[in-house]
Length: 172
Ligand SMILES: Nc1ncnc2c1ncn2[C@@H]1O[C@H](COP(=O)(O)OP(=O)(O)OP(=O)(O)O)[C@@H](O)[C@H]1O
Ligand SMILES: [Mg+2]
Image (spheres, protein in one colour):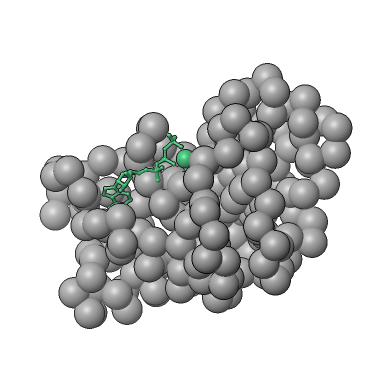
């Protein structure tokens, strides 16, 4: 698990991860409302050089950021609409030419590839603490999970957050 102590830290972690992302990469972001999913997406967008507005595309279904590679940001919170959108071609954006980030992935599970990085956000003990659990499935997913954990370890050495390897005692 990774313990982030501020929105800026969550964004910075994602910004660094962005530098290793490649076309076809899919990352799912799971967690309650306000748990930090879009904050993480914003960090990735910033890492890819996008300085414009990044917000949850709940009502617009999906957002496209013209970065290189392009970034596709899905929010499947409104499950029904999202499924329609994906059935009409949105699914090609998952694992395609761009990088796909998916909030509320459980609602569109059937469209997701098997090879992905799954990040779960939970509230920590204080207001600005978030615990990020990153699990990679498939070769690329596992590679990205390992990269994220080593980035967290590097940030920990700078006193920015707390990183611990998966499976370690979480009671701190
Ligand atoms: N350590 C932290 N990491 C990320 N966000 C944090 C942290 N601490 C506090 N926050 C705050 O929590 C909120 C997270 O909002 P964000 O839009 O990223 O959540 P979300 O998971 O995308 O929610 P939704 O499901 O509504 O789209 C922001 O207001 C942010 O400032
Ligand atoms: Mg969001």
